[in-house]
Every structure is written in C-alpha cells, then in structure tokens.
Length: 400
Ligand code: PMP
Image (cartoon, rainbow, N blue to C red; front, top):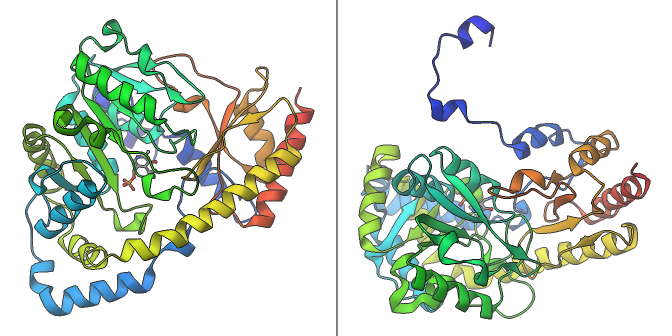
C-alpha cells in the first residue's frame, strides 16, 4: 500500500499498538520449502481424521442440512455443549452445559475474555514466558502485564503474594505442556495455585489445548477440576484444534454463569455464533467415543517425534545448552548460554535453511530471556529433525 492510502485511515489507539507477531513474520520465511522449520505451532496433518470429518459432514447435511445451514444460538449447539460438559465432568470438573460457550477456536475465548475483563491499565498476571497469541489478544485491551515468577517446573504458586494479585483481573495459566516451554505444572503446584487463587479472590484462566496430547507420565487433574465446587473463579479453555484439526476453528470455554452471560454478549457482537455446520459435524464425530480410538495414534506420533528431537539435541547441542523434556504437546524450550541472542542466531540459522522461534517475544511483564528459543517437533520429518538440529548445534558452538 502506498503512503497516501495509508494516511487515509486514522487508526485507533488500540490498533496503533498492534505489531505483527514475531512468529507470523518467521512463518512467512519458513513457507519456503527448502527451510527446515521448527518454528510453527502446527499440529501434524497426518493425524487429521479426514475421512471421519467427511463422513460427519455428509451425515449432518443429509439428515439435518437445513438446520446446519441456519443461524444458531450464540452459546453454541446444545448437544455439543452437553458433550463438552460431560467430557470435562469425566475429568473431574463439575460442569453443566449452561456453563459451556462454544467458540470459533479457543483463541476467540482469549479475545472475548480480554474484551469483558480488561480495561486499559488493568493488571493481568501471566506466566513467564507465556503463549504469544494470548499476550497479543490481551494486548488489544491495553492491560499492564505482570509476570508471575516461575522455574523449571512452571509458575511458582508461592510467588502469588497478595500484593502481586491485588486488583489483578485474572491469571492466565497453561498447566499442561505449556506453549512455549513444554513444561507441566505438577500436582502439588496445581493444588497450591488453586488454593492461593481462591484465597486471594483471583480469577484463573486455565488454557489447555494440549492436555489430550500426553505421551509420558500420569494425567493430572486440571485447575477447574481441582477447584471443585469452589471453581467459580476458574475459567477453562479447550480446543478441538489439537485433537481433530485446527482448520475447523472450534473451541470452547467453561465458566461461571455470570461470566458466560457477559461473554455471550461479547461473542454475539463479534460473530453471532460459531458455524452451525462445523459444530454439528464435530458433535457427530465425537459423540460416540471417536477420540478414545483416535488420540492414542496421535499421541504415539508425537511421542516418537519428541523422542527423536530429544535424541538429536543430546547428540548435536553443546553441553552449555539445556532444554525441557515435555510429557506431551508439541514444544521443547531451549536455554543457551547467556551471551547468545537467539534473534541474531535465527538470522544465521535461516541462512543455513533452519528456523525456530526466538524466546524473547513470549515474555511479558518482566524481563525477557534473550538466550531462549522454542522448537516444535511435530511436523518435521525425522531425518530433517536430525539435519536441522545439527545445523543449530554447529551455529551455537561457533557463536561469537
Ligand atoms: N492456546 C494456546 C496455548 C495455543 O497454543 C493455541 C494455538 N496455538 C491456542 C490457545 C489457540 O487455539 P485454537 O484457537 O486453534 O483453539
């Protein structure tokens, strides 16, 4: 666009603060087929149940085509809401269908939460580092981020002091295989976090798109489940993106009725409702237990990919580098010696045909660690994982 047409528009203050996501910019480069990209956060397409989706759309269109093509309620398709409530209840949370809002991707839930809970200058607590897409969504509403201190085990519940929590609109937490670090909060920390939040009157936003992708260790109850009857301060986000496919753009949110009411108003203003056909087709897929047979295959694929990358890292990365060993999900987080700036390293890596995401953009409300990076291992073929990790290892060893 030329200068003249640019100046035709007076952007809102909100929009003026928007910057393109570091990951999006990198992904543009990594679309080149010769690049080995550990940068994206895409699920493995081999796991997409194309036939099941096709059959479900056919069934819905042939048995309830007119309903599927009609407007629907903002809250979502009732049978799908009931399925979500049951699914979460089976994991120990006490959820009624009325507490479920169907979303056009769980990313929409982050935006809606920002819309109804954040004023300019509101304090929002985040893990450090945290999911970049959430930081972007919340940023549109101009919060003041405050980082909750964490260590290798994720966020530290004892760091949630009354002072830190005072007036915070919520704490955004990712207990399972966190994006970007792959870390999982252990059971003791989950209990402590839920108790601290209840004591401090702090709402918790639990984002769990990766929970079903556990391939090591024992499943742990989520924050909503642990909060039990007292769970009114916990909002839980879930997604079909990593269990079926992200292109469906289907997610859900579970919260106390008063919050659901507000979110429904905000969603109505945003998109009226999530696509009826998609909701009905996905319900058709999941209603008879499809996930129970489908997910083990997806988990096994991810487990092998993860194992392969961990092996390559231990062979090719210098001893001064360290990395997380995820129990599920899609990401490994690497910490390099302090003098290595991974944004500079990325430029060198791209010249050698390898991409990753530098860690700094994932930090908000505290100091960024410029010597960190995120590797995604699920979409790269195994022989390329090895080759790409070897290149990175050489660049790190030679870094000046
Ligand atoms: N939360 C986290 C932590 C994510 O990693 C993602 C996707 N990358 C989302 C939410 C959004 O997922 P979706 O909108 O596809 O449900």
